[in-house]
Length: 618
Image (tube, rainbow, N blue to C red; front, side, top):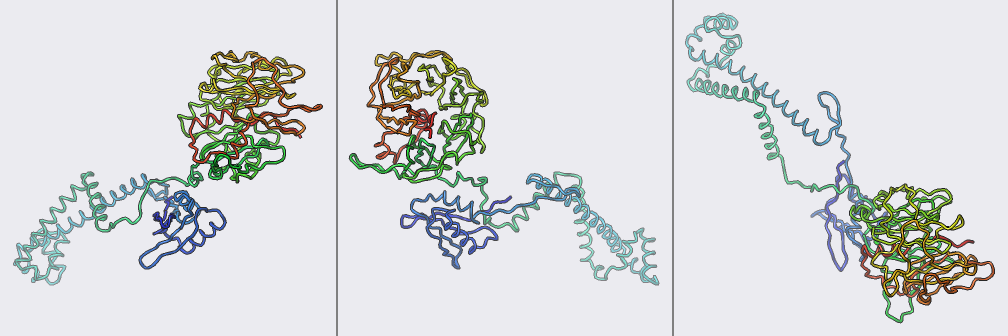
């Protein structure tokens, strides 16, 4: 398959970039190509082109694709290559007869058999030329004999009654062959001159040299191969002209990734599972005191839960309660305005009807071996299992997802976090206990393993309600916020002002320490989050009531205290979900424009964001 591309150049005028086409592929009709390209632009399949002009004249071809001001020339060009005849291809069926049998050949085989063919041609040609040279030398020998005895030859011929008798007399007298005798009889009178006799002898000497050369050629293969090379060079010098096309290394098929600029975008995910991708330029920086901008539109009782910056070529990994993992490239997330609702995650991935997304992770390029081999995914289930797996195990995406963890009966995946191998893991259970252990206490396991014991449950009714992973560098600044189903909660530091651990580090699999004093008044623990003073808290009741409050309004308390009332619960109502969200003024007056995305930013956002493990009940 030979891929042919048009000859392209870039020009700039009036602040706009333009793609200039000076040659198009063989057998492509220029007018048809321009018309089809215009149709694709109108159908929005090709974006970034504002105008097409045909400026061709008698001096040559010139097609101008004028680009929009915000278009990236290389991205537009790759799109044109993919969808138009600026790039076309010829399929070559390399079937050739090899020793009488048809075979499919690659380029190396083609050259090999061509050289073999040329060698055979040289051998057969040399044999033919040798035979002809020897035949001529044989005749010349007879003519030279005749010229040396010309008077006797003439007398002998004159005395013969016909040509046949003359030949017989010549053969008998001079011991000649039939061929030589016939050549003498047919010899013209001019060959009797002295000059012609000298030419005969000179020709004979040349013929003998040629015979010697041809015999050497047949006897020596190296001489034959050198001759093949010389003849090919001669053909090149005689017929070769300057190459008009340019041969380049193949870039392979144009993938969709080549068509999309790797620029920063804003990803927003609502509590009900609606996701969208927004251009960073929509989040404009405002001066202090501004009125703010209307942010993402959501349904009633839904709210914006996660907002972070990613790049188009990064991966977003979704983990479901049944233990499956799905991928999406960031650029595959539907694009929407800042005020649009977005699309339901269930409509974007092939998730089963009775399954739902529990957590997500945003990662760097999954083809970067150093990155994927030095990062891990830690997962926790409701029954207290925890599993650590190298990110490399999840680096081969499939449309229908893969098994991220084997979920046992009556269990489900609750959380998934991306770590660098040096984090601390905190797991809390319904009964109010929490275990804190070093990540290194959990050895890396295979992708389909079911994990090991992360925390021991108090009884059959107890279950894990959340997991938090904290980088070692962030331990002193991290606070834990826990909330119970009857509306009580508190925040507690991991490390107090004296540097002492408030939650002591234990081994994996222990019963843990008390994180909140659970009583009949407080109800069971339902939520654990790592927070700072810069976060807001969103509380959703089972009745559908939603309350938002600032984390900074809650004072820091001790580990084993009962906490304070966060929300008044009426009747049989209780809290359904609690999640940490960005401050409203940060969303409305965000300063994301020009944000530099780096690995640490991605990791921190991953450690701080995961889909809440309980959802609002209708």
